[in-house]
Length: 355
Image 1: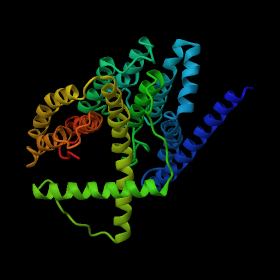
Image 2: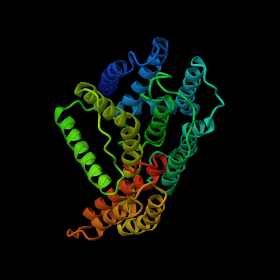
Image 3: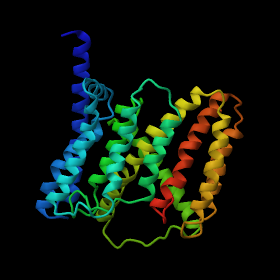
Image 4: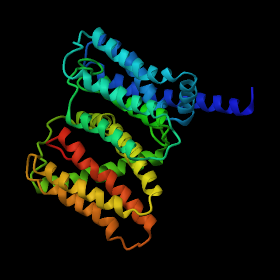
């Protein structure tokens, strides 16, 4: 065995080990959240699926795991379909075990999201190809159906588990990482658990500042209501903790993957390949400002003007930057495009919440 191969196997083992530890921590919280809130049989059925799918989430984006996948796919081109077929079969099995109808809702949407990007990149098997319009087209054709349509199938884990998480949601995340990181061979896509107190403190401070900003703006236009709590402080703290974890699972993972890991990643590479950041700024403004107006005037409440205002502020930052260096403006444009797109893509999913 060569030193290079031994090093690769050690990296693969370490990646799987760290992913397993992150899965165990999340599973302990899952058990804490669901115990007593659902039938024991529902919990026992959901537990192996929860372990398997979240272990995949915490490992599939690691470089050693991606390389192992790519080496295996290189042996037979049909191997590229094994992963999406496998997770879809497990999804069907979970529905059948829980007595759910396979034809209820829009199962075609999940089938499309799992197989469409994989099929495109498998047919265009050129991982060394530079980021181009094909990549942005595939991204939009994956993101927009997921934003404007719902699968409408009950795949909650547990099946009557008060919405801790759903199997279909995790499948969409896994399909995105697999298509863009493994099949397309795009770097820096996926999730890597980082167990550092400094990172945790930074994340908590950013979230607190974010919620404070939302509260101030929301109260000013009657978009946020204060209803109060009559529960003891212990129950209130538990509710806040569950809300934070729920936000991480249901919102943060999805958005960090599609808007940071994929879209921002592609924009960074594409702007770096181009001669000027300005063309991206102009095209982005032409697309996102009318979209922000459309989103604003379809929202409930008095925030109709707010998305457009945020869009203008975001786009003004690179244009009015005091630093005249193109690289700095390019980075600001990258930030604007990736964050501005969230305003109009995410809002149709949550018509009463823009943030």
